[in-house]
Length: 365
Image 1 (cartoon, rainbow, N blue to C red):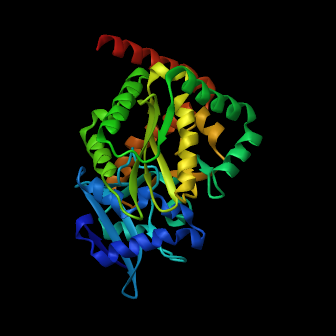
Image 2 (image 1 turned 60 degrees about the vertical axis):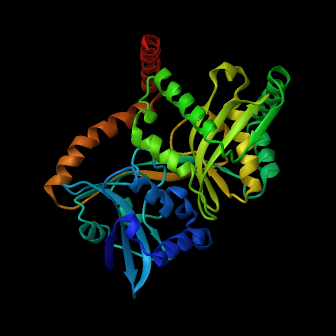
Image 3 (image 1 turned 180 degrees about the vertical axis):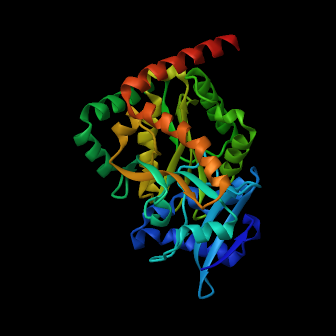
């Protein structure tokens, strides 16, 4: 393999076009997950503006680009997926039938270890280092919204009936309901981030928007728009007042769900669920094939999904002391988290404790 490593801004126009073309045609070659917007050049470029060490390895065969591998690298050679912690799809974007050697790629990138937590399917050279495989629920809308809703009524009749009834009740009680699929008002984005921060604190979770780089990244992506990529802010209004919102990323065929939140004052109307049904309708109208709800077990995801796609977490390592040390530090933490999340008898009391701590923290503010 002929491998060159660049800063994202150093990529030529031809390379960026080749990367986008690979994503655009991925579904035609049986690898639709490669079209995920988290694997796009736009996401990598935006992350490079707010994080250090972002690089892209371009793998060539016969002088032509065969694959693009975005990653982050520390000074000691510890590699991470671009935006690890907020990225919901990772891997190497490649042309059909391309095979690569993971350790040869890592050597060329100067990496002792590369860590991932949402590795896309079809990444066998990296998959050898996977420590676990997890479901990522999706909502298929490629046959149109009515087809999706019909399937939902068959599979989850009570959920569908109740959610649609709550939308009608919201309109009666609070005023006319209006949905904007692609809201361009930055003020609405600030409202969403405020709701999400409050939710993190209320439930005892780490507030992602307390990290300046995440706020800057989301804001930058909100203003990113092209035919193949865009940040999409969807808002549900009642009588002109926002009651639920979501910010995600769109490629030509996939809407990656990312940051959903709602106004707790309207909780009894389940505005977040209403919003997701409206998002499915809007995405179908835009020609989206499916909405990726992201890894993580949630009741609302189980109710909305039509199927699941597998994603993996783990490490690819070379024989190097840095790799040994990094894995020794990270493996126990990941193993404990996954054990707790997969066992209700452990997760439920842990979740209650986090929420109790969140209430205490909120009361002290």
